[in-house]
Length: 234
Image (cartoon, rainbow, N blue to C red; front, side, top):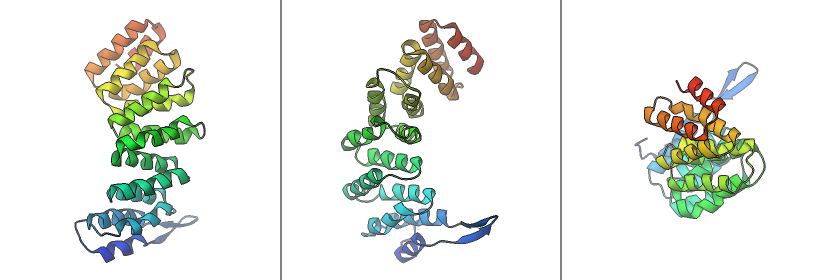
């Protein structure tokens, strides 16, 4: 990855190696293409972005995600334009679109907030909405949490698909995210509170957080949710 061999990396971007597997064949060079995209960016080659763009249309989603990560490290304004175009065009795999939107928030946090929010506000594929929420939450950017909470507040009647917004906040792992989630436990509708109690349990080893969840449940005074907490947090 520290090599400056531009021609080698460009050749690697286009390399496919189909190996026989049961029922057909499998391309075993997907990691190679993704790694060559990152390697080419590291050479500071002035046409790296031009060479890598084709990988956004690779048949393998792992390669497409690798291309997104590499493109995000090129010239910011050009990268933002290319990735916005990819987001608008969409992808057959929701995780790829999530990766694109997460990259946009890292490249240009303020300018990308409204653009990224559109993919959470619009009704449609719930898998896409969850992938987007998870990706932007996992970015741990302050702007990401603002987007998730704003979308949540704009939905007066919570639906199952709105849990994706809470899941994004859970993965954000910031103090502000935890404070919001504790408010959901203490004050929001029962289904949302139950979801947070269940999913937030991935941090059950955090004793301080465990006590805060317990306190939020005491404020709510819901015996069934308290029983759920005692079952999965201890």
